[in-house]
Length: 273
Image (cartoon, rainbow, N blue to C red; front, side, top):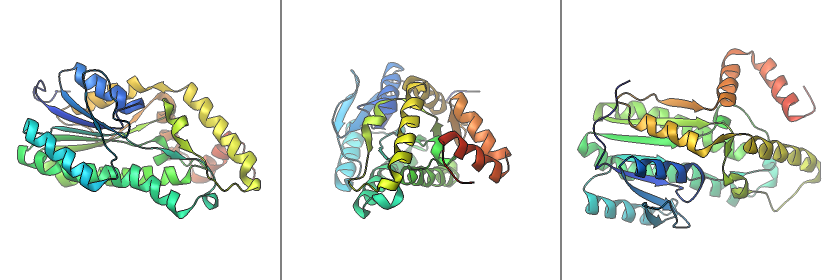
């Protein structure tokens, strides 16, 4: 496939740049000659990245940071939304505040960042927006219902956005990684309220997640895919990353719903049909 026009002076913003996929992506883009601004709550980023301490849920701070970059560089070419965290537990164990917190970061933060860069991209008639989703946006994962819901929301948002802005020279792509070796386990929040009936099942899921992460693809592998998508003239609207994730996505599409559900429950050791 053809690559996009020269990127030596292009400007990229990466959220969640202090760790994991965001960190790896920011570093790769910087190494390839982009001027990269890394947003994170911790304000840390790879060497050579212009790190900005920012909470993506703070609308005023996001607007001010984006405007400052525009005033400094005169352009924004790329946005990679990689900030996010996980809630692990049963639906009824979490409070309304916790529901809102994960949507504020994983969904509304992505929407807010996207809205703030679009005007500049529209003026330049060029832009690439990459949103980091997850295979759980395609495949159900019990006891991560809230996280899965945020990723389903990002699925719909990204694919709809891509069709909305193509005529402006802007493309939006969803990246769906499978289990990835990052520190997301340490960013996984458990509920303060614990219902004993769910405890054994939740711990089983947690063990499966930790095992999956340890055997998963690297953050650099996901960053490679993100960088490749950014540099395509005609990028796809969705990319599933990792062999296991691709197999799951294919099975979800091809298998009868009942058979897929049965296999998933067996995989997680869940009772019932």
